[in-house]
Amino acid sequence: MALILFLWSFVQSTLTAVAISFVNKSRLNYILSGIFLTLGGNTLLQYLNRFTDLKHNMPEFMFVSDMLDFMLPSLILWYVWELFGKTLNKKDYYIFAPAVISLICSITYITSFQPFTFSHFIGSIFHIGLLAGIVMWKSFVFYKVYKQLKLAKASAKNKQKEDLLWPNILLMFIGLSLWVAFLLLSYHSIVLPSDNPTQEIIRQVIEFNYIIFNSSIILVTMFFVMKYPKAFSGNTIEIKLEDKQEDNSIYKYYVERLNHLIDVEKVHLETELNEKGLAEQLEIQSYLLSKLLNDHLGKSFSEFINEKRVQHAMHLIAEDADKKMTNFAIAVDSGFRSESVFYVNFKKHSGMTPRQYRSQLKEKAA
Image 1 (cartoon, one colour):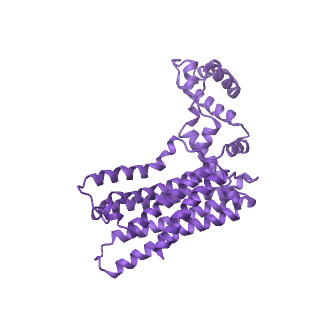
Image 2 (cartoon, rainbow, N blue to C red):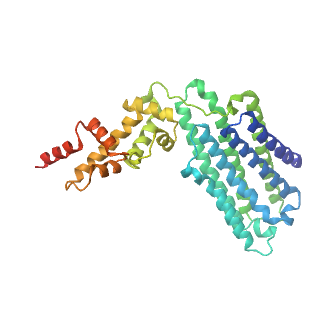
Image 3 (cartoon, rainbow, N blue to C red):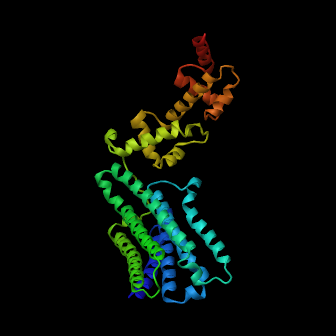
């Protein structure tokens, strides 16, 4: 029975990956296809390791399954980010680091044995370390996705709740995957005699959990394709904030996050900062950032950022009592592209020119 389920899971995962990529040729669906290809590849490796002599004939490939276990949650996190309009940028590449590190460490470990055998890997301290890493990484991804969905639920209107069903299913999948990873870690961490019947029972329970987990993902996905085809349209989920923003928890969260980016991280001093870039740092869609600024401050993005830059420039001028800094230097340090743009915005937001402001400070100090 287990043999049939493993083969069925592999075939269906592969077919699902191919089908999704053709439903709508979009970035989102390509990532989702990658998720199912990774799942299918891992299932195939698990089948080969359990029901063939691969682990004895080619033990060097034992670690590949663990590497895919690191990669799967990374792909799911990437998919969820894209689903809510967050584009992956360079600073987000860390989500692939666990898989890459596990690959490098595994190759290094394997080459330290000549020859390398099955017993060198399974149950070793290195193997247990990999399993512990998988549990920690899946826990982290579960938290990140949970946090994303919690914010989305808090802001979504009732008619948008249906759009959140699919990402909630993905969260459940990560949770089940975490549970299986924890069972596997526990199994290899508990030292039992090889002929102990308890060990065989535990192994069968873990095997059952693994294959049921994989099968459930495929069955639920097939159900969603038929019941909610919109979930695989390749479009992002656009969450609209409620009209009464002051009572909205996601509104308060993003206001606090925005203040942190300005007051602590000083992102407004970046000359190349634009609305899309700030939205990505907030992990929010651009149109929501625009609405946030309009509702919270009654200002556009450029008005908000330029005002913050002028405030910084005024602070620099106040500290530059000896007039060592030129207007151009102050402009660049404050995030403005040119002195002329700085001059126009300084007068607009302060009501005076930089020179007049210096004179005012001098009079107050006299």
